[in-house]
Amino acid sequence: MAEVPNIYKPFPARLEKVIPESPLIKTFVLSPEKEFSFKTGQFIELTLDGIGEAPFTPSSSPLVKDTLEVTVMKAGYVTEKIHQLEPGEVLGIRGPYGRGYPIEEFYGKEVLILGGGCGFAPLRSLLYNLIADKEKLQGITLCYGSKTPDDCIYKPYISELRNTEKVKVLRTVDQGDESWTETVGVVTVLLEQIIVDVEQTVVVVCGPPIMMKFATIRLMELGFGEKDIYLSLEKNMSCGLGKCGHCQMGNYLVCKDGPVFRFDEVKEIPDLWN
Amino acid sequence: MQKDIDQLKKLRFFRKFDDSIAEQIINSSEIKEFRVKEVIFEEYQELSELYILKEGRVILGINIPKKGRINLNTIHPGQIFSWSALFPPFISTAYAMATEPVKVLAIKSADLSQMVEENKSFGYTFMRVIGRTLSQRLADTRFQLVNTISM
Image (cartoon, rainbow over all chains, first blue to last red; front, top):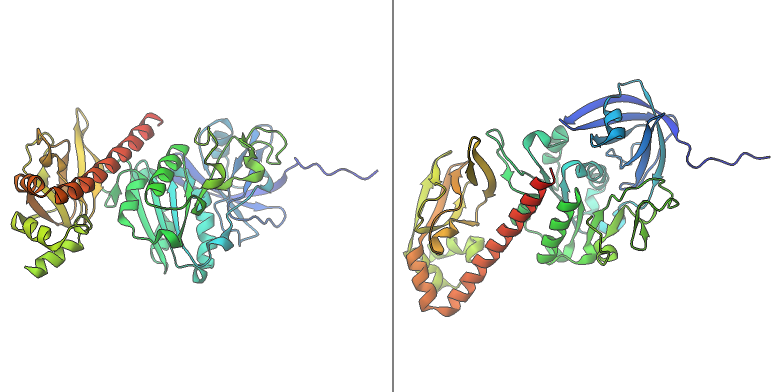
């Protein structure tokens, strides 16, 4: 009798490197046992034997197939255990799952990216993808907010972005200090500093639910269309296969139908921001 | 004068106003400069001028007992600050400090109030612009508050 493949079974990936990003956030560079492809915005389930698994959206380029980077904020039991891992240890991966960013729909437009905190992780993957395709775009503006200067992640990558043609980067922190020379305030204040043609711009928002809520409201006030705002939602994804129902949101299963949604698709859902 | 008017209308705040209004505003205003780290006004200070940032960057913040100054908001060129000068009791709700060499257009609030009273059409547009600014600051402050609560 032919063996039925186990769709929940992860495959091994070796931890090559750990990059501290902020006091609570680290990036883990993994070498999957087999070539791994994903579309930017899709997520994976990362497994620790005997501990558990949790969903993460890769922060690396989808164009790189031999390594995979996952940026993890220490926020609970599994993520705390992941933070304790050392290079050489082996984790499990399954996926990719869900619907990522429809990059082709961004062609010919300006892309405005609003990120908050660890929400920058999937956006970095998106940026790698967009920059590879930047000739097909009018430009890319990244507005990134974090709580404090210490909480800003991907500092070397930000410097790289600032030297990249067609890319503009604005950063803000909720609470500045003596060393901080950029903007102070929530991420929506950065929208005051940019001039874009709302008709020719798509917006991608990813961050904590509070940030996504306030950012979406402000974008609507500025005249952006509901169909031009893309949200990356995290809703307690568990199986990743649309079977367990943990991530149900209205008529959608976020793990299968998302995690990337256009605002017009989800705006009527009462607990959208919860 | 036309050069001054053209310069003024480059500031986002004045885009909606016509040349005669811009001229009146120029007559009621002066350019003030501040050095890096110079305090433009303190918290709870009586204000008599509305500032529009022309160059540089200004930080708004409040003093917290035992913590000192906490920076909360950055003002960029084209944005207004010291709006408290327009409304009784004319007392600032934050301090303002230059974080870069700063040039502001300082408009006498008494003259502005008189212009608003005498020219209702200007007054309506002006108050809409101020209202929108304050509404956005309120929304941002709520966002900041909710962010802090959820930390």
